[in-house]
Image 1 (spheres, helix red, strand yellow):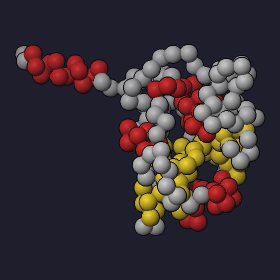
Image 2 (cartoon, one colour):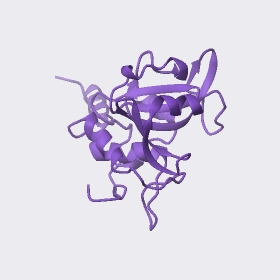
Image 3 (tube, rainbow, N blue to C red):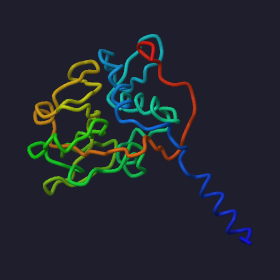
Length: 202
């Protein structure tokens, strides 16, 4: 018979596991993000209040809560913490990071989470990796939608758009850090609460 301390440790470890996601589908993740096309960009926007706005991370969180069991407040706004905890997938070997000049979009899959990196220091968080011998920080995020395109709540465009990835990346950033979900979003702490408002009926 299992002793009491060992049984307690097992129960606690099982309780600490993330809540399982709903049936995972990268296509549903992309489709959820695509519903936001045209929504105005605002830093910190989370589709609430009278004027519905969203930012680049908001797009990730909106899509994640629509394909998973956890609300958007479950996810860290610090990409380094999110990557460390595997919230939105694991780093993809060879693409974590990859220089803009070296990226082959055929290595990407729809639903991949794109973290745009640059050697300019982001004072809000730690650097995420070394690229070409230099530390790089995350400055922007998006979702790869397939066929060389990605969906992004974009401060340049002022709204959520779907764009060609390579020209955008090479114009604005040094490279990418890519994560890929195998079984859906898995935040370290699952919170249930009212979801972000939809711009239209889901």
